[in-house]
Image (cartoon, rainbow, N blue to C red; front, side, top):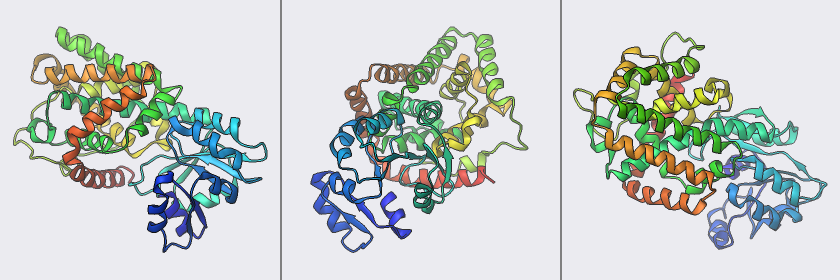
Length: 404
């Protein structure tokens, strides 16, 4: 996406990928005079005034150590990793002293229109802003540490929730869109975003979670919130569950008043992979309760990070707001959590999944993370095409509506 957008704005782009992709990329871009495909990063580094590393966080040290010493005199170097600590460390370790470091991070995937999306910079630099202005994104200036902290508060925990949902459905051998209790309203958002995440590369999420120095605490707290709330559900302690959930909700949503809820029933119901039941079945929404409890326990007010938020985070915040700002729906979910055992099997698997993802992150277990991710990815793979199409339409429509 970067090569296309920047070249379309009139810039000459030198680009490379893995050695085995060189010939196919040359053929693909043979008719594009502004994109010059070269064999490897040495050619990019020696010829370019602005060099952007777009590799996963776990590989950034190795890649920069290989190609960094070839950097052109006086060049500007940046990275597109979602975790800046290892990226900046690699730049400072391997790059020549006569270059400048200006990193960025587009807070959306390659299939999302970058217009209006946040774009982060380590420091202000006119040339980089001029080059990246073709995205028509919103630049937000942050230090590397601030970037990683906000990313952990938003993306890392959001991904953990959806990864856990997918694992729970996989463990119970369910395609949720085939079960009427998972179709309609908030459930549509849960399903579409879960499938959207599992249709991507595993290292995108592993690197953000494992390499980010702030992410472990947030993901561990989410798993702890899930576990403690699930125990209250099993104990049938409606009073304590209600007190804890509503206290967390007051902290997160109490200081924000809007004329109306930004996500409405008719909007949420439009984006479904299945058929909605005539009479919607109640859900205890453990994943949403735990998210708000996690924010409360960590002292995070998610609205403080809206300028640096991803489309998925805004959707996730939107559905939690939808639940917590509807008293009748919230009370129904709390009663269901204690009195209705219909979801107990899924709730158990969800709790187990949240704790296991947290352990993967805590121990830096990339291999285990990959195995867990790809096994569930394979389970859901037959519906990725439909989910991507519906999910793209959903994100575009909901974000357009919520920003009006």
